[in-house]
Amino acid sequence: MQPHLPQQPRKLAAELVADIMQGARQQAEAARIAKAAPPPRRRQGLLLVLLLPLLIGLTAWNVMRMSGDAEVFTPEQQEASIRVKIFLAANAVDHYRDSAGVFPASLATVGVIDPVLTYAPSTTTYSIAASFGTTQLSYRYGDSLAPFAAAFATLRARKR
Image (cartoon, rainbow, N blue to C red; front, side, top):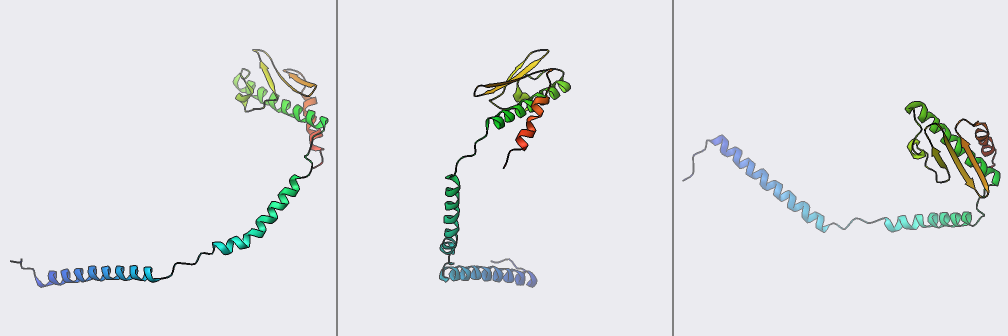
């Protein structure tokens, strides 16, 4: 025996079932159309054909550029480069000492990471040294940094 529902709820229930059935039919129809439709055309082949000449041209240009002689620094430019490194490292150490009251334990502490530079701190002084070839350069705390700062001009004058 079915429970007795008033007329209005029966009508709403019937409409709800009809909407559900219509949605199911629409989904089935959309799935059937999707299966029947041809797959979308891929334009990858066309894109490859259009970009291939560009790729070949760039590759040839890079190969031609690499075949030239490598840029070599003169001994004066190499020395100037090391002098600038020492100047920057000494300034970083001095600023660290001004703010912390002690010399840093290493150059890495002040953000200078360069295997060419050798840093030797003590409680009252420090030194920074570097060498290339037969040339030895060194700075000791308290010495003038002017010769190291002047190296910027040498590097700036280098032709590009």
